Length: 284
Image 1 (spheres, rainbow, N blue to C red):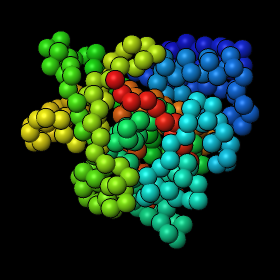
Image 2: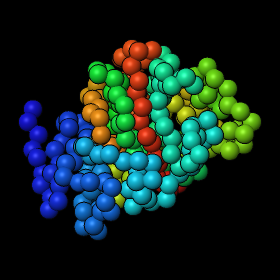
Image 3: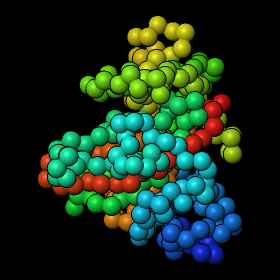
Image 4: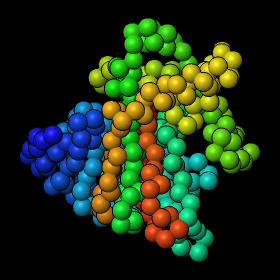
């Protein structure tokens, strides 16, 4: 399927798939965006949900400056603070010795910081070192998944709230949250179906951190969340981004699930990316 290239005064945009995503060329993110360019980028963000800015070379300060143009930066939870700056998280499979550890994080479907009172609006992820093949970031379109539900299911989900818990998601992944992390990120209820305010479209809001449905038996609620997740990650809703060095992805956490693809030898090849997040608003 051929997807049309769109042209703006300062950049070109090309859809990456029929599901979601678009690449942008012609911008240097080290430079501040002009007001009309920023507006056009944000409109594309709302339309395509994932933007890929090609051929970028950002250090931490430059990525922070770019991210701040779209809102307030979100601090990372304690275990993800890999350097002195709490606003930058280095996502990598490297061990303490600086060599590939064989372990890859973020392989379960999730949306960033959904356990916060104000979950992330956007994540910026910059490819610094990538394996020769594999290691994609996969995205599931939660607007399309919601819109594909039968009318009876949509009606049943109205008003339902889901509790997001960092502590429970750590337990499910075989880990344990520290007392500091639990105090920093207590259980947080949000609507299971949220509305994107700029477009009025509705999206499922769940993922790895979604622990149970508020006011319902935990096991029954968990089973319902698993059913909805299985529906939402069907191939018809999914895009897998094949990284190029220098890519900066900007994605909408309000209407996407994402995960890292562990389809490469993580004990042999390094995978290193630089992450910043923009704080959002309370889901409604």
